Image (cartoon, rainbow, N blue to C red; front, side):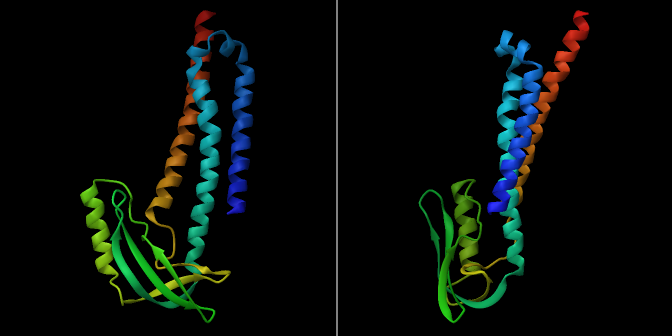
Length: 192
C-alpha cells in the first residue's frame, strides 16, 4: 500500500504544479473578480484531490489483484448471519489453518452497503444462505501474512467503482480548467 500512496502523492504533486501554473498565468484576472473565476478555483481543489484519490484507489485495486495468487487453504464456515440494524450486511465467520496455526476471520463478502434497506437485507440473506455454517470453503491466504485471508480472491465491484469515480472527478477538474482557459481566450479575442 505504501507504493500506491506514494503514487497518489506524485500524481497530486504533478496536478498541483499544473494548476498552480494556470493560476500564475491568470493571477491578475483571478484577483480582480474571484467570484467570476469559480471554475479555476474548483479545478484547483478537485484536480489534485482526485489525482491523489486515483493513486490511492489504484494501489488498493493492485493489492486486491494480487490476492489471486495467494495460497489456497481449506476452511470451514463457523457462523453465518445477517448483521446490523441500519447498515445491514452478511457476517460470515470462517476458520482456516495456515502454517499449522488455526486462524479465523469475518467477512461481509463486499456486499453493497447502500440502497433500500429491504434490498440490502435480501442481498445479505442470499449470501448467508449461500454460505451456511458448517460448509467447507476454499480460503485464499496471503503467504507473507497468514492473518490476511479471504474467500473470494481478486477485486470486488466496489474497487472498480471507486477508481472510476476518481477518474470522473479528475476529468471534471481538467474540464473546469480547460473551459475556464477557453472562455478567457474568447473574451480576450472579443475585446480586441
